Length: 160
Ligand SMILES: [Zn+2]
Image (cartoon, rainbow, N blue to C red; front, side, top):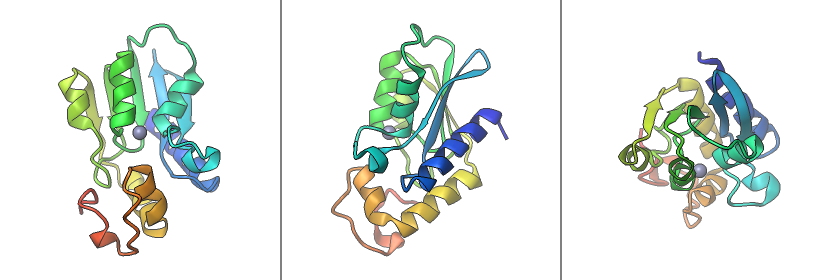
């Protein structure tokens, strides 16, 4: 597997170990990781700290985003896709989009190349998490009213 996606998965696993949501992200430029992070909404009690935002924040002020690629274990949501478009990041590689379709079309419509690797490992990580923490997950994607324990009727967002 792509070493950068492996690094993003390692971030996701670290987030899970911290009691958070298992989504990780890395920013790559010239074949090197220049930033990495994971979702810290639970850890920091901060709804804005998605994996991609944490990653971009950790990369700091890099000047230009030309030539950067953002990796995420899950297809970026509208919040993070907004940051991608705003900063001019032209390539996004997602681990999967089956458990959450994210904002792929939004990014593509703004000229971003989006690659979906459809990785079983990323999918399983999210399925296991959603099944054991449905409230936490639906709060993260702005569906906090959904508290059903039955994953099959949680949301049309979960597509099998
Ligand atoms: Zn996001």
